[in-house]
Image (cartoon, rainbow, N blue to C red; front, side, top):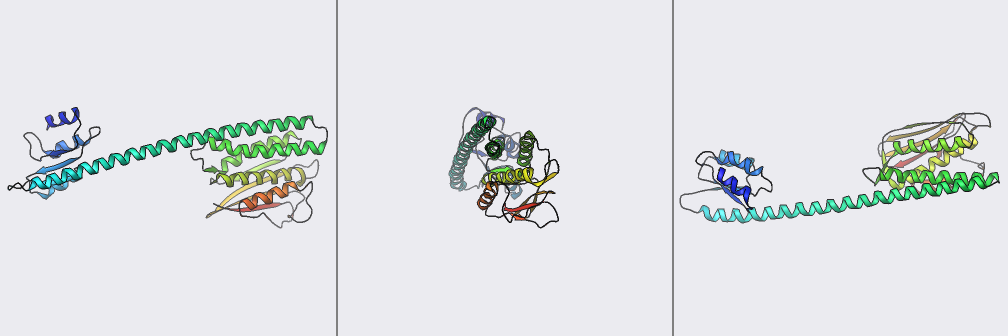
Length: 307
């Protein structure tokens, strides 16, 4: 047994025939040591023992086949067939493992490339947002400055998606709770910079959505929160803006609510109405619609998204 192990370790064999009875040990003692070798060859257990328990033990220990040695010598044909089958199966297994390794390597390269793309897109969008902010600072017209600031906020919301993607383990999906937390932080900073001081509260369950849905979702939240900052509360009055994300089966319900003057989605919107059109367009992308709850005060806008 020891001599056989030394030869297997020293050179490459396509297949090993292992007897049960050997001078100082049994094949069942040697078999696990063969299987533990790097690139171990397939093992066929060949023995004259008629004890079926030996065959079962050998197969459980990793032998690919079992051949019983009869006195007439017919086992030689069976052994030849077993060797041919074992070699073919081992070759097929190795080819499959090599192909799977190549697929994994190609997938890893693709994911790395996609993360790099998202990283560069996020940086480019951040640069565009900064340029828009610089342009807004040079504009004297109040309405034009406000329009540019809103544009910057929209760009930042989309850039946040790409920031999430290049740090994610799976670029196909975005964690809604983590993304909304970052988005709320960005919105809070942008709105406070304009002198408005409302509190944004986030309550989101851990759930993942497809990347394209997350983009539309982020734009919707950005528009509704921005409108709430601008129009929900009278000048000089501060209040809360609440964002909740709840899962119900295969549906995610997102709600943005406030306790302000209230608007139920009907009538002429305040401002240019661009924000409302953007919200409807993003909802259409999600194959959903915005629902406004009838409340005594404030506004509560909800959307159901299929996961």
